[in-house]
Length: 151
Image 1 (cartoon, rainbow, N blue to C red):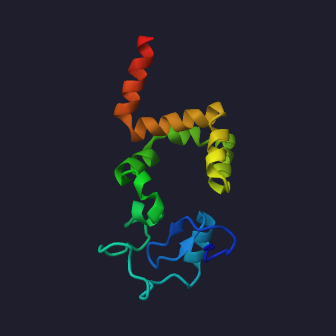
Image 2 (spheres, rainbow, N blue to C red; image 1 turned 120 degrees about the vertical axis):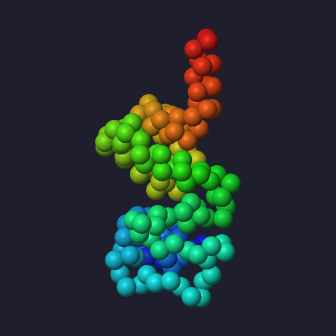
C-alpha cells in the first residue's frame, strides 16, 4: 500500500501537478509546496502527452491531476467544478461549521461508502449534495423537480 510522500501516514489521493508526487490532503500539499522538494520530476513522465501544469493561480489544476486512474470514470468536467466554486448558494452552506465537519469526516474516513451513507442521513449534508447536483447536472435535477411537482 502506497503512503503519502509528505506525512507517510495516509493513503494518497492526489498528485502534485508539478512533480507528480502523491499526497493525501491540502495540508500535505501546502507543506510540500512550502519546502524545497517540489520541482519537476524528470524521471516520472506526465500522465498524459500534454505538459504537466505548474500549480499556480494562473494555471489551475486539471481534473487528471486530482483523480487517480481508478477514479477517471467518475470524473466531472472542469468547467462544472469551477461552477461549484462560483456558487453563492454553496458558499453560504459552507459557512456552517457542522457541514464543514461532515465533509471533513467523509473525506478522511477509511470507509468512504459508509461515511457517505451516514452523512446523507443529515439534512444539511443532503441539502449540500442537492445543491451540488443542481450545478453539476442541472437538466437531470430539473427533470427530477418537475416530476415532484406532478405528485
